[in-house]
Length: 131
Image 1 (cartoon, rainbow, N blue to C red):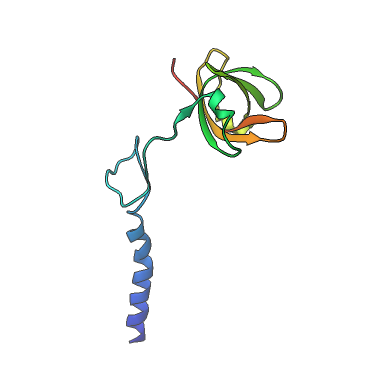
Image 2: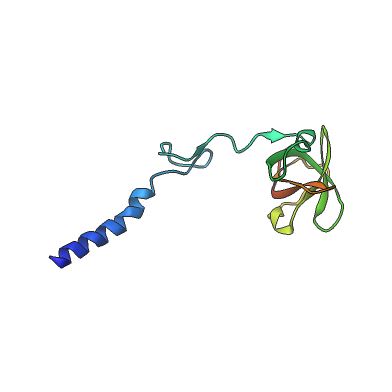
């Protein structure tokens, strides 16, 4: 009797991850399944402008499109779009092998970083866009 109860418990524990694997996740490009029980469905994030980003609160996630026009220091760059310029902090690991010039249009995703008299975007991802 104890062997049957132990086997039943083991089977139940082993089958739980299998049952949970079909729930939740992301639907969008490069996915193979079309039905899910939950998760995120929608755009990756609305593109905003530099002028709008300057009015957002600290730690707000933003997506900007424009050009990185100048390197200011080790990991601080000047980003420009049609509405203005802003400093962006891009750690070396965030480039992911992407090389850009001031003529290349890029999309940057990151968080607003506001301090007493300083404002910049802490970049988490750099994507080089096709012209």
